[in-house]
Length: 292
Image (cartoon, rainbow, N blue to C red; front, side, top):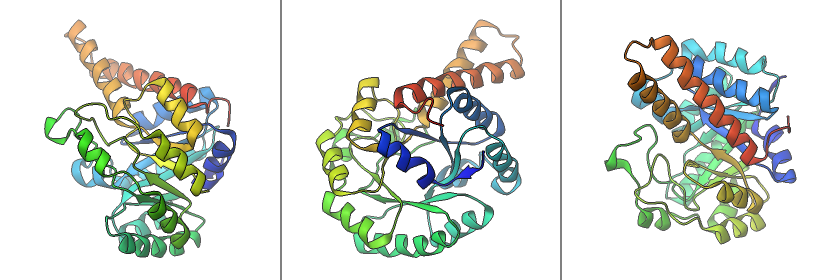
């Protein structure tokens, strides 16, 4: 099945009221675990390259490994979107588009006028390449890739102060031509200091005002009921990474604690099996199983 951009995946999901899992990939094993789960569940999926994690941890040598990953996605039996998460500038996003990604995100800034100008410039370039663009209004707090570090656990107060404003989001979408928009409604990247309350009414207000699909980042940590409720109210794409890394980490620790002589090969196999199982469970909860 050919590669997809976000429009080919999200609008069907929006119409039929199910959510789409999007997660960051950082090596072949993780990519294969996610794709295998999506194929078994017959679900579309979004695989993301995270520019901030690239710069911070260099998990993924993009130039060397992207082409094989693209081939894995092209050969998949389900629709797969290859998406840039949190692109930082026009220049870097342009390079990722030229490299072959089918979708990109431009990180939002607090100055709405500047946010609009940057996003519009990227949309103008991306649309000439059949590449979709995700924008952001309302700062999504926290920092991924540093799970467990107390210094980066986001407080409820900080999350609530960064909620997306409906009129600003509407102006942004109408002024830029973005294909979907990431909104701040009570989630955060990584872990939070205490679980924040989701602003369900805000989701409904945004969904009523904005026809483009809504996206949340930091989807780890919600209950099954909360996932189903936010999808019902209009959230379509759910960025979920921390929970998958945590599943692999926990399985690794358990495997080593039970057998000091266990090999890395077996540890990695078990960790990736845990990731695959977690993905399959999420696809069922989000309602995308059987939708490919």
